[in-house]
Length: 103
Length: 250
Image 1: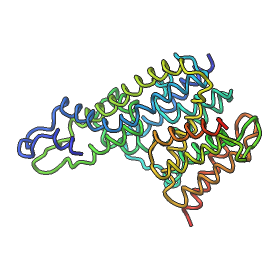
Image 2: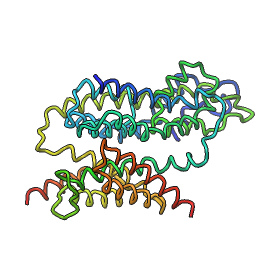
Image 3: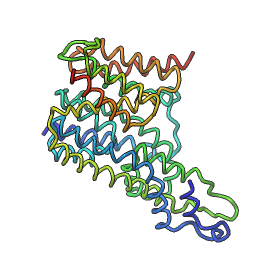
Image 4: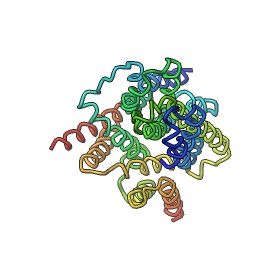
């Protein structure tokens, strides 16, 4: 039940963002600092979510080559860098994980 | 852009009329079509991941309807899977989605004359992709002498692009939920979420400031992961943003 409320709250917040300036009608510019900060938001957020996901195993930092998910992620990062292709990145990352785990 | 030009009547005939509402609507659908190819697997993966993260099917689908923002939905599902406190989930989603304010500011001048229900409808449909397509329509000139206000029906173009995306997202979520329920955990499909994020982040690293943001946010996320209530996540995001801003200044 609380999760439903949280979802509705997030939905309302997201809608408020999307409607904010449209509702205000007047052309108000975002403060310069905030406008510049916006570009870094997805970069910082996605990185901070992803890295612990693959580098922390069993509640401890594991930066060794024995961490299959970390190694597969590094391979995937190279694929993403070279191809900029979301699908290919996921595909090769998953295949890499399966191969590493078969050893 | 070719689609747009085809959809508009030839310049001479346009002396009197703007493109009709239907004409604009279908041009919007055509405009968003190439993007839908990329959205399709993304929606599927969201549905699959939401299920493997332990969300009930109803809730996974409802999230697509209520939140309707791909990356935030992935993050919410992921955080919910590791029992993150709801307050932190809400704050994180609020931070991740804040970019929509920028889109809102960008399209606002073009939607001024519309009724409030129209404005609310288009605001609901204002995703990254719909914004990217709709703004191409508004970037076309409106006031040449022979074309009196040819953008009169441009909101229908926006609606076409937005609805095209909305329907695709809802359908692919549903398919993903259905497929996800059949997939055994041993396939480790949950790993496709970090992979998706890697695929999104890496191409965004286009300059030194972006790289520094990623390095600082990443290092911080590992150093503070033990902070209570997952506060480490918000801390790492804020540190990354500040590092990026500082790097850009130099």
